[in-house]
Length: 573
Image 1: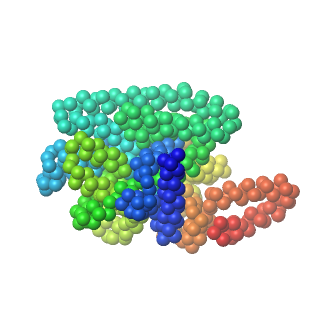
Image 2: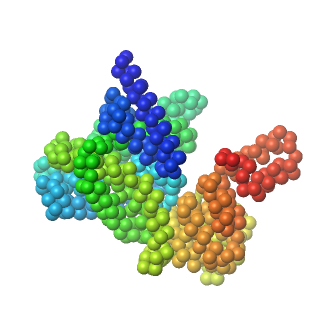
Image 3: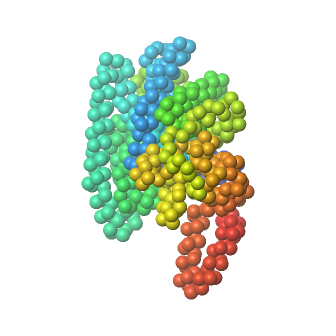
C-alpha cells in the first residue's frame, strides 16, 4: 500500500506542478510545453527531488506518446498520407542518410569519437527528430493541417518507422558482417505487422468498434479505444519496433470508420494529461551539474545540430518541389534531436557502442534541443517574412514560389478567387459554382489539385501567399477573394499582398483565433468569419425559433452580432 500511495503522490506532484508550470508559461506568452519541461527539471532527481519513483513516472509517460500518435493517426488519414508519401519515404531516407554520414565524418575527423562504429551510431542518434514535441507545438499553434505541418509530420512518422530498424541493427554494429541479416529480419517484422494491421483495419476493427458503439455505453467505447491504442503499441514494442509506430497505425485503423471523431474526442483528455507527464519526464533527464560542467561543449553541439539539420533538411524539401517558405519552416521545425534518441543512446551505452561521457553529452544536447524547439518554430515564420524583405533573398523566394502548374481560361475576369480547397474551401467553391459564378482556386496540395482537375475547376498549384502565384490570378479583374487557408500566418500575408495588387477588392477571410478577428479587419478584410462562432450563431438561431421568437427578431440579433464582429459573444469579454 505504501508503494501505491507513493505513486499517487508522485503523480499528483508531477501533474500539479505541470499545471502550474504550464500556467506560468502561458502568462509569459510561451508554449505550455516549455512549462512542462521546466516542471520536470524542478521536481525531478536533479532538481528538488520531490519524486520517490522516477522510473515508474517515466514509464507512465510513454502512454502519453502513444496517445499523441494515436490521435495523430485518427486525424492524419490515409488520404493525407498519400498526399505526402514521396517526401515521407524518400525525403526521410535522404535526411537520415545525409545526417548520419555528415555527423560520422565530422566527429571522426575531429576526433570526438573513438572510431567508425561510434561515429555512425552518434550520427543515427542525431538523425532522429521529435514527433511528440513538434506535434504538440503545431497543435498549439493551429498548424497541424498546414502544408509545412503535414510535411514535418510525414518525415517524423517515417523516422519513427525507421526507429524499429535502427534498434534491430544496433547489436550488429559490433559485428558488421551480420548487419544485412539483422536488417532483413527487421524489415520482415515491419512488413508482417503492416500486413496484419491493414487486414485488421479492413475486416476486424470497424466491426468491433461498431458493435461496441451499438451498446451506447460510453465506458465500453472508451475502454475499447484505449485498449486498441495501447494494445497495438505493445505489439510493436514486443516486435522490437517503436510504440509510436504501433499507436499511429492504430489511429489509422480508426480514422477510416464512422466513429473516428467520437473516438478522438474521448482520447483527447487522456492524451493531454499523459502528454504533460511525458514532457515533464524529459525535463527530469536534464542534469544541471553535467550541463554546467560541459556548458560550452553542449551549447556548441546544440548549435551544430540545430543549424546543421536545418541546412540538410532545406534542400531536401526544395528537391521535392515545395516552396522555399515551406522548406524554411520545415527545416526549422524538425532540426532538434528526438525523444526516442534517448532510447537509442541508452541501447548504445548498454552495448558499449559509446562511452558514458558521450551518452551524457547526447542526453543533455537532446534535452536542450527539445526545449528550444517551440522557440525555433516561432522564429521560422518571422525569418521567412524578414527574408522576403531582403533583395538578396527575395529573388530566391520568388524563384521557388513559381506556380507548379495551373489551369486558367485564357481571358478570365469577373471571377472569385478562393485560396484553399480544404473542407471550408470546397464548400465555398460548391456554393459559388451552384450559383453560376466563375471560380479560380489556389491550392498547394496535389490531392486537392487532382480533385479540381477531375471537376474541371480552374486552379493554380502553389502557395496562395506567393507574389508570383497572385500575379497569375488576375486579382485586378476579380470580383472577390475568399481566404480559407489553414495557416494564420499565410492568411495574413495573402491579405496584405492581395490588397497591394487590388486595393478595392472585396476580401472575406477565415479567422482561426478570436484575436485575429480585429487584426484581419484592420488589415482590410471586408468580412472576417470565425467558424466556431458561426456554428454557435446557427444553433442559437434554431433554438430561438424553437422557443417561439419571430424570424425578424432572430435575424436582427444574429446580424447585430456579426456586424459587431462577435464582440458581444467573445469569451474574453
